[in-house]
Amino acid sequence: MNEFDLIRRYFNVETADHTELGIGDDAAIVRPSPDCDVHVAVDTLVSGRHFFADVDPAALGHKALAVNLSDMAAMGAQPRWALLALTLPRVDDRWLTAFAGGFFALARQYGVTLIGGDTTRGPLTLSITVMGESPRATALCRHAAQPDDDIWVSGQLGLAALALKHHPPGPSAPPADVLAACRRRLEWPSPRVALGLALRPLAHACIDVSDGLMADLGHIVARSGLAAEVWLDALPTHPWLADRRAQHIDCLAAGGDDYELCFTAPAHARGAIAALTPTCPLTRIGRMHAAPGTARLLDSAGNDISIGRSGFDHFQDQA
Amino acid sequence: MNEFDLIRRYFNVETADHTELGIGDDAAIVRPSPDCDVHVAVDTLVSGRHFFADVDPAALGHKALAVNLSDMAAMGAQPRWALLALTLPRVDDRWLTAFAGGFFALARQYGVTLIGGDTTRGPLTLSITVMGESPRATALCRHAAQPDDDIWVSGQLGLAALALKHHPPGPSAPPADVLAACRRRLEWPSPRVALGLALRPLAHACIDVSDGLMADLGHIVARSGLAAEVWLDALPTHPWLADRRAQHIDCLAAGGDDYELCFTAPAHARGAIAALTPTCPLTRIGRMHAAPGTARLLDSAGNDISIGRSGFDHFQDQA
Image (cartoon, rainbow over the protein chains, first blue to last red):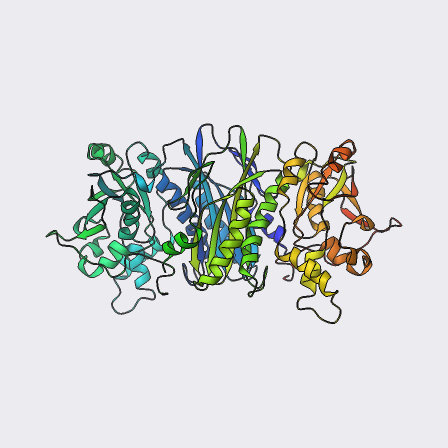
């Protein structure tokens, strides 16, 4: 099978709305909606680093796209197009069929068209580019937090990190049903696209929690030139973790791979934000402060909690 | 050094025209020009497959971007934005400084802004997404060739393939000066961006010669539903190769990595196309035919020449 056959067999789909020219030319051509800005982000997943080599390929296809859609969600952008750069050690029909199945199921769910990519031979690596759009000047950016904004987070935190911490499960692992729920969140994250769109008129700054809550909130803090306090006891999580907050601060406040949205909004938006909970659970977890500073995690007595690991970083173990 | 420091140190540049939001948020935001379509392409380079692990990192930075700009050139698009997904085994200051130097020198030359990317740890792999724009419905596509079109190619063919064939140089290698010229073409290709823009009103179909002339022309043939003849004796190349056409048909007609443009145009455009030669050398090498068929390579007597290897294919050595 050559590269062209491979693309035709697994990845060639009909083009859709907003797409002038899809797979099969030197570039794809898209036509953004009138008066819209175009968003673009790329994320790479490396075997052995971001996923286990024996991962379910359907889950991998899902997750590779999901982490990129999560970037669109964090911008309040409508995802529309994706490109897949796939480096494979070999052509394995079952693997590719399952991978494409996971990828396209999620793409269809969000109306995303695969418009191009590249297939090469080498160590298993996926690099996905996703593009979306939003009406001019409506995007949710990291630098837009305001003093006294509430800090909110969607869904539950720490489940993916807990699953990773207990892989393979040892004697200290959580009960099997808890671990299964956590592993599902690690392997099949749900990008918060609908929430991101709904937050456009309500939120100021927004980021997706991919590297750990405190690290990601730290980007909002730094780029907005503000400070933040976060209340450990308020962090939404799985009941099993909620009963063991103190032992699992690392998962809760610094665990990666949550793909929830962390956003700031003015107090007068609380009612409108609470009304979004049918879309997904939303919890108020802290507050922004005016003076430039850091993101602090506080216990119930208002004391600072230090966390050893402030977020996932691919190069942190190197001087 | 963490991922954020790495990006700040080597890859953070000021944003430029057409860019609303560059590096540092969940996605970049660009604002295409009015009434323009947006082009996007991605190419991946894998160490040991597309380049030698000990390649000059400045040349690699140049080439990684050049191959993507070549895709924009082939569409007649104005390149504007790039994203760099860089997977690195380690952080090596000298390597990264040189790589970024090669990348940005070319980016500046073509007015391209690096607006985002991703850095991860793993086997050395580069995946670059490039975006450009063109006024609506002016793009040069593979499917647009017409019967009786001339077939043209820019520059010289086969030099990069010759350099690759003789690396490291053995007893049958060309003279050192020839090999040096060929290696320069392999490592420092010049994307034909200005030519692509100039061809918009003149050419019908266009493709860049990255996988070998006959394979790439084959895409125009297939997508246009036509046939093509190409004259071996007409193929422009280095004088040393021109004197040895018969022995080096593989390099000339099926060698990859040329990054020249192959395009079709009506006979009445010959004068206007010839007037572009100050931009770069352009040679008429064949003709399109009406009946659906293949791309045939002919010798001076009009006989078919068979070439064993019809183009570079990453998966061709696997059943």
